[in-house]
Length: 167
Image 1 (cartoon, one colour):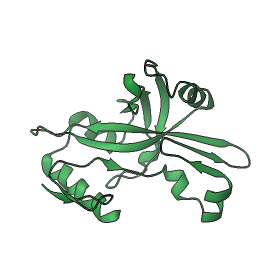
Image 2 (cartoon, one colour):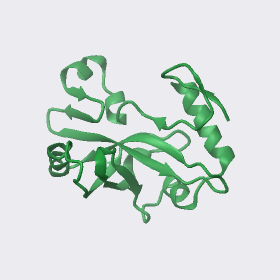
Image 3 (cartoon, rainbow, N blue to C red):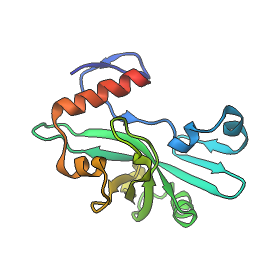
């Protein structure tokens, strides 16, 4: 399968990562609020509401594709508690900091409803790679079921095509 990259405009043969440029909560803000109460970077997002602050980091999620040599990679956002976010930020440049955090998936994955409520474990990785997210196996949601059971190649290609159209 080849595709046209929405970022560089060139044709590629390998599967692209399905990426989100911001967490779901950021997309819902008005332009005024994006300018006044939010801070969006390449690896973090902070939204300062009147009564709370929401903290997000960028991460990856790898979806197994059954009977195929490639997996489907997602570039997603997860929300963290203040304590976890501060630990992550304090160690952002530490190549050897390996830990796990509880987080919530913070994007709405096309083809599923309400994926931004899925409980996850966020695992940091050596070498300053983006953390990898693993949904909690006991959380009942079709996306979590697909994560653990895998999806078929045609489903992966449909997801790539659908996300390419929407960007």
